Image 1 (spheres, rainbow, N blue to C red):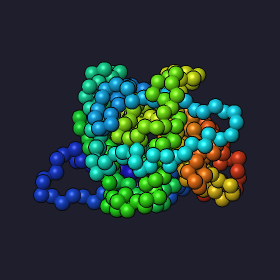
Image 2 (tube, helix red, strand yellow; image 1 turned 120 degrees about the vertical axis):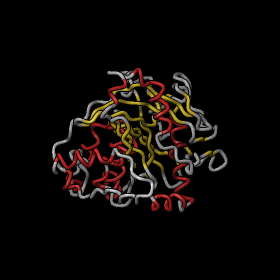
Image 3 (cartoon, helix red, strand yellow; image 1 turned 90 degrees about the vertical axis):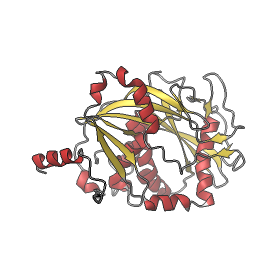
Image 4 (cartoon, rainbow, N blue to C red; image 1 turned 90 degrees about the horizontal axis):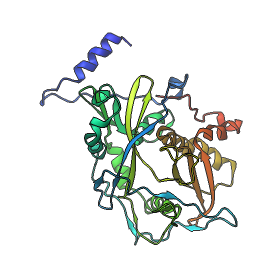
Length: 332
């Protein structure tokens, strides 16, 4: 690419367009993994700058009161037998997805802490500000053949802000969710309720409502190649027994998946679901993903911990899976 031309186009993008001028067509990225193979770019270990909480009404609080504590069941005996259908739909309060929040909560935190950033507010010039979920979509693009995405990029005082725009296809898919899919979404949140306590020394209480408005979000700083990153991601819980209490290495990601009994099931799991788990946790610096495997009746029958930095080894250990499987060296 002509660097002078790229610089000129970037400068032109900063100039406000006349209101009556037609919008330019959105740029697109091909998804062929071969186009992105090569050495993995430098990615600085994320460091936490701060956090914020969202309450049951989705209101912002600049503290950690929504942080939950990892409290798994005893390891002896049979499986935990968590009933993931319990409370559905009577005790389920899902977030209103018609409300498009964009970067609002992250920008609120940034306004409150702008002067406290290491290097001062000037550090933001040239940085990228976004959500972890948007970076996950970018990272997994070479392997995503079903779901497209669209991001809006806004440059202000040298900082690039990335926010997702819901595509017509994504909106149609969201509105057409089947009752089974809605219940499966609930099960994921219900699993968190079984595995998390409100205080470090207390036990989980799965009798309450599952309210997906409530969230604890970590705000982190990193660097991808030459690009400074400031981003935020929702955190499921922190482990009071972790070797280090320094965030984000004390955080734990919680996931659910169906029980798998055949090689084909594991092949699909490694190639698709584990990829997204790795991307989400790697970007945020979360060291472990704890998965609950459910049976067809919705009961969790077993738990398994997947160390983030060892996930690719599960694929490497099965040579038959390598053909067409993901590799960390592929990147956008």
